[in-house]
Amino acid sequence: MTEKKKQFIYVLKLVPSLLNEANWTEKEEEIVSRHFSSLQELLNEGKLVLAGRTLNMDEKTFGIVVLEADSEEEAKQIMENDPAVAEGIMLSELFPYRVALMRK
Image (tube, rainbow, N blue to C red):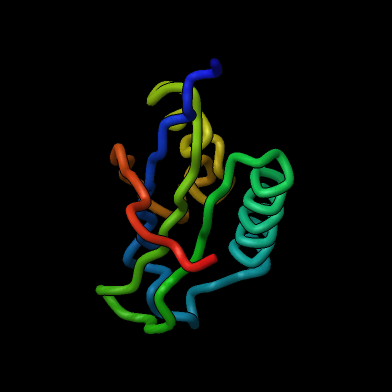
């Protein structure tokens, strides 16, 4: 019997200077595009459970990524390789997580 994958959630927050949309440049737009592409890749690989963000654009705004991985080390590596995190436009924090209920 295969061991069930572990679930993790990482929370993303924009660096404070990017909460003002006037500070966004083509560079940040390109990083976010690669961030979205990497999430789509994780989805295709069966590792991504869900991802999304709040729609407000203030100090409370955040995004989440729920994923399945073999270990916390793998989940941390996925998070750190997220272009938004690796390029420094989003701060991230990883937590062990378990989806308790989900609509079919």
